[in-house]
Image (cartoon, rainbow over all chains, first blue to last red):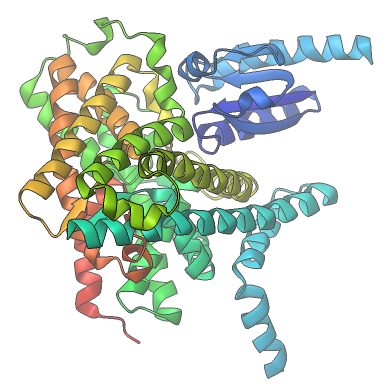
Length: 100
Length: 426
């Protein structure tokens, strides 16, 4: 599974998100390749899941190169991460499992 | 034996690319990553560093002529505030010292948080790196060399990393969140905004009732906004300088087209630097994060700007535009009053710092504060940068760039005065 975390510059918040998501996936037992991206180049990326915040999404607009998009209101809330990212990841891994 | 030691010091630790590779190697090993991840991570870190240097060369090729034509034609030192240029120049000249100051500064931050009652820890890799680059380059400019340079820069970085987190904490806790703090060289902005906004405004009258169109969202895209605002600024400066003066540097190219393309060229250089930094820190930050968690469980994390943007999304844009406007007024004031140094608007950091001030202003003093305070502070910060700029040494002044963190004009300025007083020590 390919996941891209996106923020304004692709080095601060997106990197923290990558660290949080990596830990989360380890707990859930899903293997994924997680990369960071900034709002300008994210259109050149593609993947199964894009994780970002509402303000960045407003600037990105086009997310068609991703199967799923998760929007987090807080970059720091562990609860929100659990509630939004885990179901998305599990659903994607089921779908990918079917294809594979 | 001596030969081996010389080789280690000169070729291994002395080579900045290898040094950063080593830092990420230790980090990845501590995180117990599988061997293929370790090899890949270390390689990426080294490549990231080399990309950063390539960006530095591009930027320097653009900045040096600009610095000279602005200087000779307008008779003032025209300065561009841009942290990415500062970072790339600092890394290409003092990469080794910056790497050491960053790593040991981080460890000093952990030590301070362990022994002192205020448990703040910085984990924002790019901000730490940028700050280390500015501190090191400025100290080198004041004549510091070798071990004295590394030691002084390490202490300055370690204390600042810790200070940024613990100083932002009370303001964050008061009106935003107690879960985390911020780590950015903008304590000046946070503190002054919070105090002033409380005096002049009413938090009940929030900015968030003002509708802001999605069509402004593009200003967040730094590479695009640097190009567009940059072109406008250079066009104005160029028109003041006049056709003949600019033509001397633009050669066969039409002078207006030359001025309009400067912003885009500059932005292209920044994009390369950003790409390099992204690769460089992607492997180091997770390691820092892991170390911080293990050694200091439950400490307050210092996080990056956007973590507070969601608390007042409209104030983000109000703060940005008002800070940018203030910066423009500051530039005009410096030119009109005949200051020897005229600092142009930063644009890139006017967004991040203006947005941050906007959020704090809105929380402490509502709409009125969000419009007024970033504007007033924008003027002040521009003037203060003008004061600290001449102290930062030939690597930065030769390229006519200064650092665009507000604290460089306040705490940073005091630090440079003290450092100058003690001299180079070498």
